[in-house]
Image (tube, rainbow, N blue to C red; front, side, top):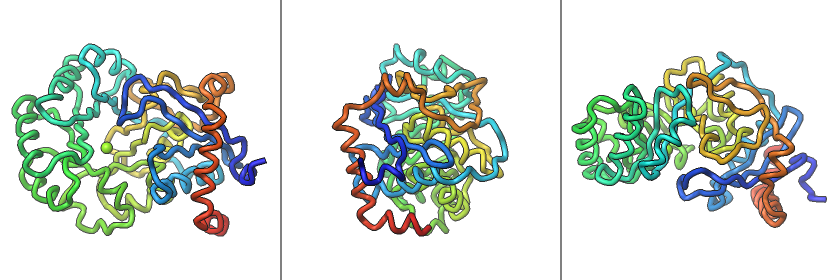
Length: 326
Ligand SMILES: [Mg+2]
């Protein structure tokens, strides 16, 4: 028996094909397990190292061992997510987010990706548009691309997510553009940064359950950053998503639609009850694996061993000790 099996009860690893290539992922692997509070998920992307994966393990254990905090609402408004796809697939992707009022679109630049904005607005002329650049632009490129987007589409943009990686670039950009700026990588890659000047370079904070280390740590981080939060996810299965929904539901104020409908990008989810989008919202509930779906999307045996070793590697840095005394 695996020596951590009593902590990670009924650990099972799933491999779910995605409908489109999303950040280079076409099969999403996730380790699911349960504890006294319910089912949880550990699924840092496979290329993440031990240090990057540790907060995901903190989140995973919190999800299995701690009850959810007080929830202020029982449904969460969600945004659609449009990865870079061929134009003839845009409709097929967007209709998987019924009733969504906002769409987040991944873009590289104006030249090659403005067709995605065009197609999304054809699908729903009232869409609020978020562009996610994943920090891909320097200041000059950001100014040029955003000028073009704004010139072509006008005031449809709710915000632009991580246009540049450098804080100095974001500070300058914020003074120049009439569009709000959201930060994602600035937070995820700088969890211990001092965010006292966050208002100088951003308007919105993207907060994700797993990379932020779970609900309790995420809520402390939101308070520290002091910007309105958009609760989002990292291509989690419906188990991780349920914890993201609880994080969103625990907010006193929630003024933006959340990026928690990404299971629509999977060929199938693996949970019951199914995560259903109704009029652009999802109900906040704990979920658990559905036996038939788990069998269908179960990963190969060597992948389960790989995930167990991955957990052990983090555990062996002293994590286990720290966690058990927390
Ligand atoms: Mg992002």
